[in-house]
Length: 367
Image (tube, rainbow, N blue to C red):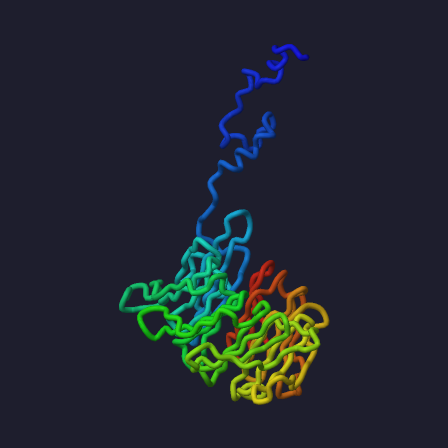
């Protein structure tokens, strides 16, 4: 048995007096305590454009809203900004027309009206912000004012779309199948239509038409697409397509207008195999057409602009634009666009802007 005094050999010697934690950085005499220095440092929470660019939106006045997030460490948080078209090539914190720092990530931004911005946060909240008012501040009309806020979703919102036919209405969805149709015509953000079980599988996309504010389409990773009618007293949907082969897995959707592609009866749905399927809402449960866009990677987003259908892919990130008036011939292709492509908008008839992680913004010109 060791003598009792042997324990004194392993006590911290009196001569061991390291400096305070904040002074330990780079100190080679006490290297094992540098973690204490790291933990003692205050986190940098200063406003900035984070590395993860996650969402972009544009209004009819060519004003952009941009959401960037810090997705590293234990504390994730984000900011959203507003920029004019002339500021796109030199976006900074100081050059923004408006900006706001959030305690959580800013997952999606979408313009409702020209001066109303919908913001979906990572803590399941949906907010509506007024962005421009000469009455509120004549000297600086770009200023933020919270119009409404809601916690109607139990999980973070993953899909958000504004009805083009009625900019005061929007629909949001989350991966767990919860749907909400929002009415912004009053003085608050009100959910006028709610469903908790839109799909039995993970919901991956929704699309709204241009000619109506009464219908929208959703799809899920199980190969099911549903069309919803919000005029019904209770949540009402019809199966537009269901994959009985258990091969298809839908990832994205877009609804063409009467003057776009093949008209407002056609819905385009992308899948995990890089294909884009055409559905005619007048002929449910049947694929009108299927075209392969990517041999690698899934179709992460679809955007329609006149006769052009832009398809975005991830793993790897790529962009392809097809011309419907030329039998869907590919007129533009861009490979390795970003490390991860997250969102895109058409800024005019022939210019597509994509954002993502790694290479943050890319402008694609069809001319």
